[in-house]
Image (cartoon, rainbow, N blue to C red; front, side):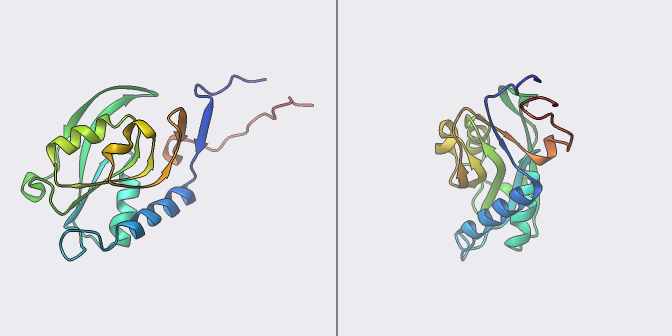
Length: 167
């Protein structure tokens, strides 16, 4: 039998699933922006927030899209969050009317860092874990804290040996 994954609980997300869940996030956000229900712009937290942010921007017809690059993970271990690249300061202001999108809120450290920079922005994630839940304004699916989410951009299709061996 082969080695088990480093996390006992694994939640595997396909490209189809992230697309469906990101569209559901857009539907939930539609009409809730502060400017007549619209959002001024979308900011993706890189790298995981880029695919959901693109889908949300498309669905809500938001043409101004930027990124904030935050590094907090080193492979599968989380460290101190740090900003590597900021979005356009002239467009951001204090975040009013800005929709900030990420794939997941885990401990909440990344979103707390970004929230401190843009306190009036609206924070949306596709998935949320309990420890970081209070840092996100809108999300689609909550998973337990001990679940590791495997996103499609982190995986490759390959043969998997049956649990009971090769006979």
